[in-house]
Length: 135
Image 1 (cartoon, rainbow, N blue to C red):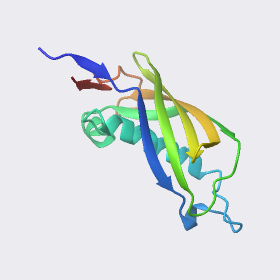
Image 2: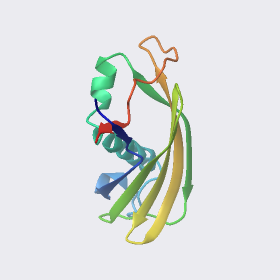
Image 3: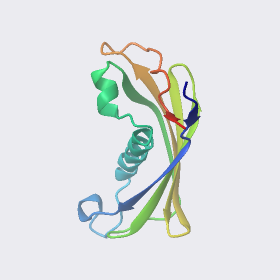
Image 4: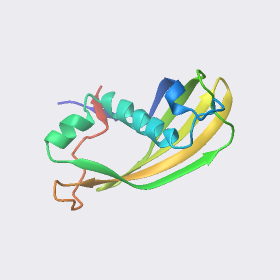
């Protein structure tokens, strides 16, 4: 018999790349949701699962809500830390929150809601134990 713990928080380092910036060297607003996805993906990977495996098993996660609040700009070549938190898990939906830091400086906060869909786009239950790891 196994006991499980839920992974609720993860951290990821991100280096702002040249192609993610505008001509003034400021990270473009459109890259933040991509960085959020990276944080979610790595949080899931820490459980031993991957989006790729989930999709092969017929479970697809679609972003149904995205919220961002920009506080300070990230700039070319900055080393950032993305803190991703699993805020809640329902039968079909998952909520994450995000905090993006440069050192101790908070640059952006955000949140997403994802819904689990089948291959035809209909809502379905999340895979059992999705964020659990054996302890």
